[in-house]
Image (cartoon, one colour):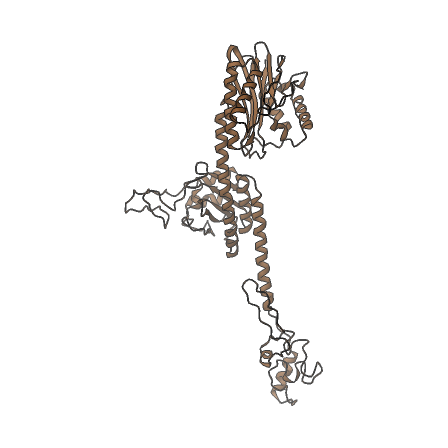
Length: 563
């Protein structure tokens, strides 16, 4: 009969059981655990003659299976006294079986792995660099048993070098300001190539290559003193200060700030990857003198490795978004023109991928004004570049024949069909004469504008038309309107409607309700009008410069208030 093999767990070899139908040797019984149910003398074990065999619970060999006689029965025999005392003694504390120790250890490992999996999944689900930094600090604080922390990203090269980021956890702006007052170490002075002089402030283990850049140095930041004693680049071990108040090697200002902010110990780790190198560091602050255990250091080290890779990717993504945003800003008007009789206001919020929505306001001959809003299909740098080409072409056609919006859009459609046949676009162009308060407009697959006044908030009746590039020959009639003094003409992109998440008919109704709800005192100010409409239609939209816009659609609002 083949004996099944027991599984190996965590590198521990289980004991091999004896073969089936083979009696265990007597010597093994003598070495067995006396508390084991299978050992002679254990509670409930039977001797050779059964549970009622003479000689007591242990059988003829005595209570411990030693093979010695149980005694002669003579009161003078010392062995009888020893046996009597052993029989009446209370059992001692039981030792855990080897399997119980292994199970406890396995349970601890499984618990740690489950915790790491939950924390890494939470980090992976974060959207944006700021959210990832906050989550990494929160998770690290829970792993090392701290309550506050600080992380700074400042790579020496690559994405993020020109835009260092610092985030506090449990620290407000005033606390970060106090930490900034901690003096930094003297920056390393790199000697020229071939020099035998090594700067005293160089990181241990660093070398001076031929290009004069000192390897292993960290970028100087306002929070650098907290990370001065981190190991050189290539080492990912952490640094602990168990008792800051008693550490005479720290700068006196550092101890003063720690006392003011109420933290007594710190633990810092570098954030480093093989591909991007050292991109920053994180430090967690304890309220009382303390330091993480070896188990906590190991767990936070594993989490740190995963978090650093995620943060490096977020840095690259943030850098790409900044590049696209800069390109878009250069392709859009740097300022709105000032034209007598009309005041302008605009809001332009872009998605993280960089959409192709655009707007324009350009002065035209004889005191006229051209207003346009449009968008191209797709997203990313390609859509932004196509948007720039389309806007530049429309400006040229508007200068030449702006008084006829239909001709402007017809020429734009022809250009788009010949040069970019795989792309579609929408646009609306309005030729405004502020002195006469007259507007002539035409649209190509774009949403109709709104006219907002004291007595009305309604959509302008425009003819239906296809987007540019969809038909072999585009043409649609123009519409002429005459806004009353004090009324505002509001243009917008379809992203404003799509971002509501509602069907288009309900999105249009929501927009009209928002326009009708503009306070009467704010209707004379185009800035107040666009801000009210934007906040009412998209209340979840973050303030500009505060948080990332997570929508996939661009949002454009352009208002023209006629005086």
